[in-house]
Structure formats: C-alpha cells, structure tokens
Image 1 (cartoon, helix red, strand yellow):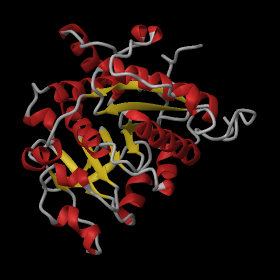
Image 2 (cartoon, rainbow, N blue to C red):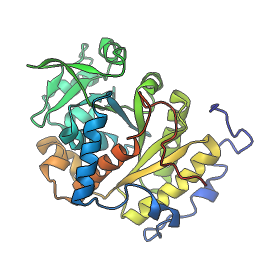
Image 3 (cartoon, one colour):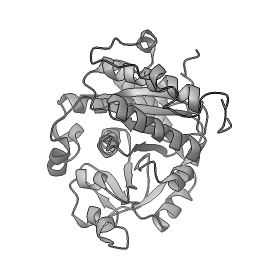
Image 4 (tube, helix red, strand yellow):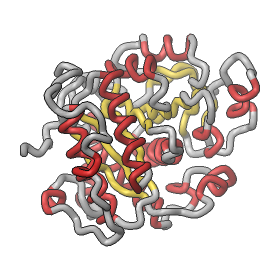
Length: 322
C-alpha cells in the first residue's frame, strides 16, 4: 500500500485528536469488538500445548524477528523486549539485539557487565561481544551499527549468531530493541520482521508518542499493520479503550491496522529490580506484570503464526474486517 494512502484525510494527529482521545477513563468499558479477538484471556493447558506444538513446527522454517520500538517518552520498550525474549526461550533459541545508541537498557536489565551497556554512552568504540545469559538468551550489541548488523541481516531467512562455546548457531527468534528514530535500521528490518511492536504509555502524551512511533514504522517499513502493548495501564479495560482510540487514528491517518497484544500493569521499581535479578518473567514469574508479559509473548506468536516466509508486508490472516 502506498505510504500516502488516504491522502484526503487530515494529516496531523492534533487535527483530529478530539475525535480519538476524548478522555479515556480509568474505568473505561471494553470495546465490544475486542471481546472476540484471538489470543484473549489466559490459555488453558490444552491451548498452551497446542501452541507449543504449532510453534515447534513453525520454527523449522525460518528465524522470526520481533521489532520492539516506541516513542521518545520512555514507554518501556526495553522491558517489553527483554521479557518477550525471555518468554520465548521455551520455544527455541533466542537472541536479543540491543539497538538503542542512547540508553541500552536491554543489556542493563539483563544484569550484564557494565561494558555491555556503557560503551555507547562513553564512546567505547567497538560493540560489546555476544554473550549468553544464564537463561539462554544470546545478547548482541547493535547500538552502534556496523558489521554485526550487516552479517546478520544478510544471512537470508535464517539468522546465525556466533554463540560463545557453541560457535555459529541458527536462531529461532530474534527480538530487536530499537528506538523509532533509527529509521534506517527499521527499514532494513522490514524484509525480516514478523511484527513491529509499538510500546505505549497511557494518557494523552503516551497516545501522541505512540502515534508518532506508528507513523515512523509505516514510513520506514511500508507495513500496513503493527502491534501495540500498553505499558503501565491501570487495568485491561483501560488498555483496550486506549487501543481502540489509537487504532481509529492510525487507520484514518496512516492506513495502518493496529493489533492489541496486551497491557502491563504498573510495577514500581521494575527497572531496578530487573537490573538486579533479570527479566521479571523469570525472576518473579507469579507477579501480575510477569503473567501479562508471558501472555503478550503468547499473543504475538499467535498473531504471526501464519505470516509469509520472512514476515512480509501482508496483514495477519486473523484481521477483523470492518
């Protein structure tokens, strides 16, 4: 679809903000159409097993890329990326590419040695070497670009990583933590990405930043759909109402469908806790936020299970027709 599709619509979010963001209240009702969407609600044991078998089969074909991005309001993209990567470990071999040149929180939240996350801040030069966490996630420094990106993205449908003590190893999943300002990298990832996941904060400001991130993804990748996580939402109903508003704005102004992956409830001190103990899905698996993050991982797998050989630019088959 052409980037300028829907050119007869208003061009700015401010011009129609009152239509899409008349106050979303804390007790907002769940939009009626949301109730029937796939992946809603906690899966039972049979559903978990079915998804696991389905993923085992899908993993034989190619590496799945999940690109996690967001606006400039610190929406928590690194928390989403780190926990998504950790939650995918039971399904296969996972790498996380930390591509934020300013604040490499993915490595910070994994508790890695300081040179893994301070080098871009201090002008350290060469990227930090690959490392494997105790939980089995391969961590790669993409904060400064260069040959690491070229080697990985030039490898075709299956991405191989140089893993300490294991040598060159094919990855089943790659999670990329990247700010929307890195448009060149977002564009290069378009041929590989199974999904672009935009992380948003609640409230009007979070709404505006999320819209800018969706616009950046649309321009860089040409994709006509993206996924949304609402981080720090007070409850699920609020997050769904927030999604309904931004989905309407994105459809009208960007010709982009926005799929809802889930909400993460507020967790005070989560950043510091993850620095000390690692991703919350493994350090405190019974916490409400950990349960939400695992459900988000399950939803993104379900959402992308039927995409093309490299993710492509097509809409997911479970798209709702309005």
